[in-house]
Image (cartoon, rainbow, N blue to C red; front, side):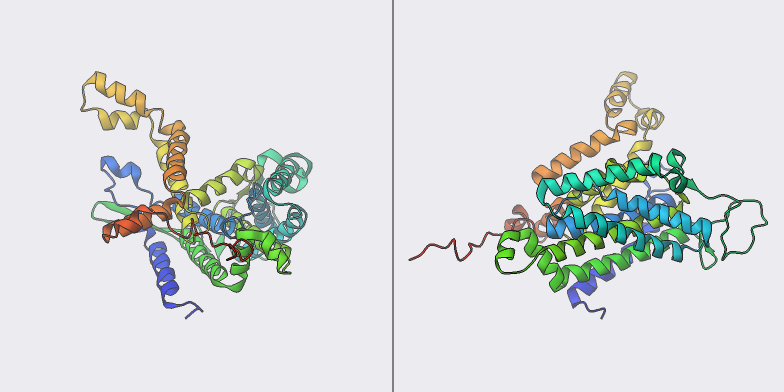
Length: 409
């Protein structure tokens, strides 16, 4: 089924089930409880987790399989957003044409940048991609203002043509939709003290993320994926066999850029706005963090990393002093103030410090990311302490000597 073996099919079905049940799983605490602060089952956050999962999975195809570290992938995210916005302004508010145009334009843009950048490898490749991304950011911010609207960003307007849509007589900006189903439509269900929100936009993003996860799974298991692993393992030896690695790396770069363009188009579809800030180097660094934190070179790692970082960004950043006072109000005043003063450095506007510390711990003790940590815990639960202590071979493969390195007897 779907060209997958039984193990991969079960894996995909688990990912699908978790995606469908996310509005329930991410709302474990009652709405009026003190822990309701940590609920993440609201539409905006779930949409962002699904969208950035696509972004990270695509980046992992380049970085995780080939070992080429790009610091400029946010350029494709921004280009995808701008392409989608122009489709909304000129053609229709239906998200399908916008998403298709985002993927095509980002793929062409990635082909141009990759063709030049892949002439170098290692740190030189990374710097080239960073340079292209910064040039794209500055052009979107200033030079290409007629197309991007500069620092204000590209937005919808009442006088936009939208030639395929009926004339707007409501006097308000239209909503993005999927064949009439508005992306911001939400069904709310209250059950057992919890408010579950089932949002149309999230399920569109979620189903697309599952489909793109399936595509990545097929790439990982294909001969093309094996060639990309060979590039990462030892490109020089691969060249000695007569195989040219560049077409494979360029294809991986373009595919990765198309994933980023799709994510950018979905960002615009869920929130009709495209700004140059989506092309900054910080956005490129964020997807690198997501991939490494979750587990580079694994299928589920980038998804976990994207969810982890977006959760921190949206949940921990909202824990201010008033929330801390509500948590510690039962303690003596001196102890309460002390705990609040200490916690203040790790939550709210300082949430990056907590994320940075956790990232350091993961890199030092779990080189394979969260996936390696989950694998160790699973082996420990099953009682296999030997496997629980060692790293997953997927991240630390045993070195097998090349025939030229073997000792002659």
